[in-house]
Image (cartoon, rainbow, N blue to C red; front, side, top):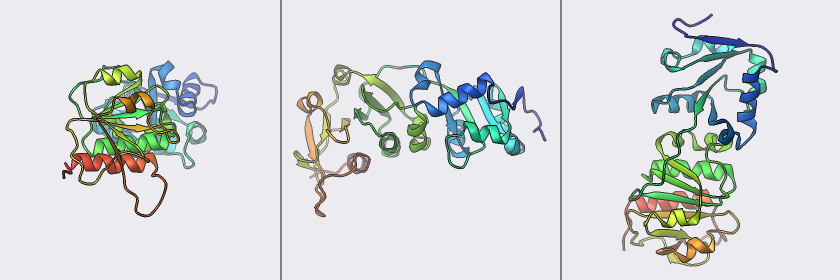
Length: 262
């Protein structure tokens, strides 16, 4: 059954179709979006999050069995609809349980980092789950700009998108930055450290500021540490050596957003 007003459709049943190869590449290769200028979001939740932010999918991709369930507004906004046989959608999907629907979206145009915005800086964070989780915290606690220094996991990679759970669509994101581009913002840098610095609870924090979270093993690099206005640590009375960087970021951004003061 085909929904009314479904617009132009292409029904695909071959694994060798160029569109299928492109979808497989976008889903499997973490940096394919940089070459193709598009990214892939899979599942009803991420598609709905993109739709609610007024994004227009270049392709709406749906399995044959899920085609009758497509929301009419999604159909009307999509430039093109691609219908895949169920077995083919499962082949394209990167999820253990294929989600049956996905969007191919054009990568946002690169924009320079903006001054005077509460900002999060990611310094060579490697794990996609950590990066996505920090993006969620940034969106939740009012830090609309996230800047990724060179060496950080790709912000628009499939794993980061899944972990971000839609946070991407409400943030100003820039990646591949040099340290000097971060410094040029003129924002005070608040740098996290597991071994030194002032205890976070009760600390007067500058606003706006740029919180800097570093590599899972090495922490924030020396160049950013040297330029920091404040170095903070999170006391851990339980005795653990350090927190996961995404957990630490959530605590720090919450503390900053709620204006903790002495």
